[in-house]
Image 1 (cartoon, rainbow, N blue to C red):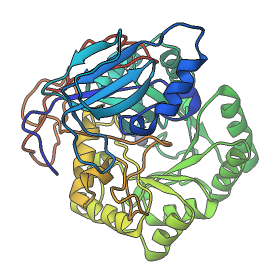
Image 2 (tube, rainbow, N blue to C red):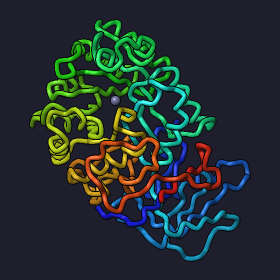
Image 3 (cartoon, rainbow, N blue to C red):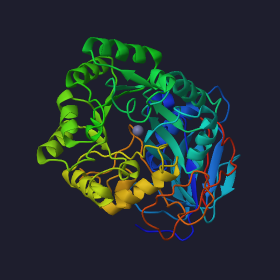
Length: 435
Ligand SMILES: [Zn+2]
């Protein structure tokens, strides 16, 4: 991985929660003129605001490496073009000089927990994500009302924070994880952030209730916690997946043991969280993961803390997924201990690089444009992007992890939010400057 001695980045975010994909990306802007033109023609005579960003080193994560001498033009809420700087700018454009900065798409964390313990810190958490360039997150178990309210407030532009995809409460067995492992006695948290199920028909009803409440996806927990908790009955998992699919929802499943992954595959679920913590994937599992289009979110940042195989073993397991062409998405499991919001995404990407993913693959694109092996896939159609690493030596981050496994050179320090026009409103450009 090329490391940058001066890591400066600016992240563009475009609100497109309803459409399920980014309205525009840096690389998408290169061929996105038609979309921009459509937007321009749909208004009632009001000119779209035009923003011109010049002087930045652009990292489109499209296999072209980094681009210099470019001008990025944004019309309304979409990137219109990324073109060589000719010195010409559209009339009435706002021009921002980004000399010495990097410009890149936003990062995505596909496995976080936001609304569980201390709800008073949630606003700080939202800002921390954005400070680290994380502009989208998937919350895979939180208090139902709180996470949906937060998601919707951000989507409406009433609250500052990353775009959120939320499952609400996770399904688990009575005496399953985390009810019996992390949350014993926390009845209020269990009632609001979990659905304890052991009957397939009742599980179906709960899926329907969550769908009606407005969740985006469904999450299950399928593990015996290395013999320390109750495991979900496979018949219950089958019922949940079947009902969720019938209602149009994807299902992801927490697993630790390879045998649990087989249960996920048998149930025809859509995603594996954590995955192969207790042991390596088997050949037939790799084949089925590819054939069934099941993605894996390995969350090395958290599972390295308890995996019997250690970090080296986990990286080896991820290498096996990569070589087999399994879809892999980046997630961290923040906020668990030692997994700080935002910062851990940069740490996790470091693990992906250790596994053998190229920087472009690690940011979600296959540079050859051909079939993978195993590019890192991210939420929906969006790419998880990175341009530099967090500082491991300083003490600026209030969420700093104390368990970084290795120092990195050329690191970034904690980012700071810069002020750009409209940057605190979803639907407008939001910026992050990392120094
Ligand atoms: Zn988790």
